[in-house]
Length: 257
Image 1 (tube, rainbow, N blue to C red):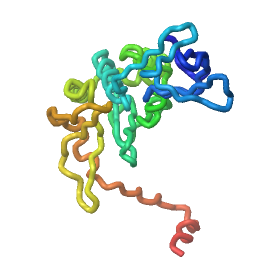
Image 2: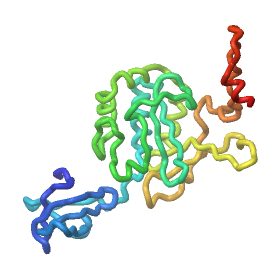
Image 3: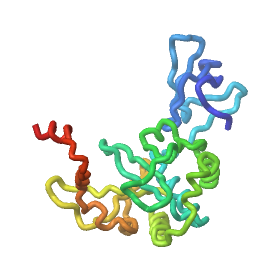
Image 4: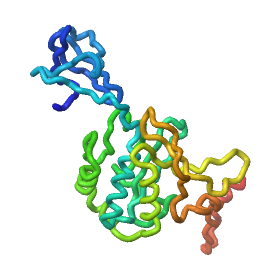
């Protein structure tokens, strides 16, 4: 099917020829003008029989689309692990609102708390809802191979840092993908009751990636290798540097006053 975007000329059986002003591919609704610059009409691509200007039907998938990209990212990471890029990690966690989940790909050392941030390697389901791309030159609905090819073209230096072995993590990740794909994703969110210590490694939260999917009823998912005890340490500020110049520390004196 041809590309569908604002500015596309369409034909409607009752309104005639018009121009699309906005598109929402998540819901299948578009807004279009038909002869009036001041008024737009909302149309549903599934039920309103909208056509391109040459008469080709615009077909919209009725199945609910993915509301988050995490399952597609998991499939991509698993394939890269199998190709030898085992130092590639996928971290996912909920936004404070709890309505969407963030995702972050990183490479190199497996340090979940001090992971490096590279432009295009992270995003949110909130953005994916209205623009279903990862952000590295991929297209909506791209296959796993196409996602890998787009990422390699976008940041070959970053992907090269994932080349190497991390057998225990790749084995864990493969088991998780076998249990969850294609309908579920994991969230590395260890919830904590206010005023109480962290629980002793509860099962990893599992979330459906699209509407209409039954709650996950499969085996419990364990936490990634190296995760045990990760959140139990206390973060303490480093001790101030020793001053041997003999000069007074004006800032420290100001803080004491």
